[in-house]
Image 1 (cartoon, rainbow, N blue to C red):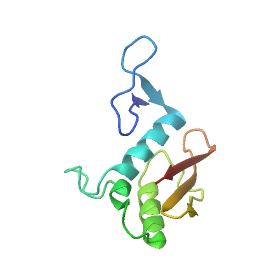
Image 2: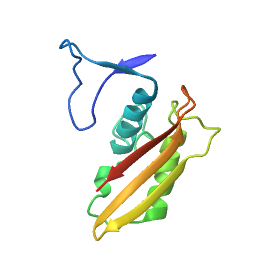
Image 3: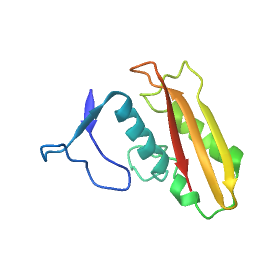
Image 4: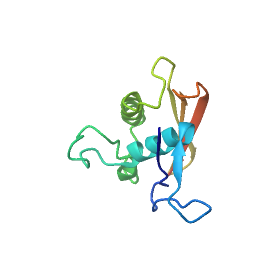
Length: 120
């Protein structure tokens, strides 16, 4: 199955020919995860539990265990993630006021381990 390609924070992506780009496989899962993690909880009226709202936490006091739990909860709801394999969420503080969220998961379609990182 495929979906329209959408870079989070932007518009739909265009293909080399100028039409709307389509994604599938691991890239589709990556885009779906970014959308899920950046969407505010309750923003989708028909799916009130969808979304982690991570951008809304920027500027707040960091609660690493709460963020880790929230990310794991959302990862467990994503169909493109192989739920039989471990999901690792690591939060580091490389410099004062900045955090790095690193997520390691197994793509359900390809069976390959994927890395997803977000920074503030």
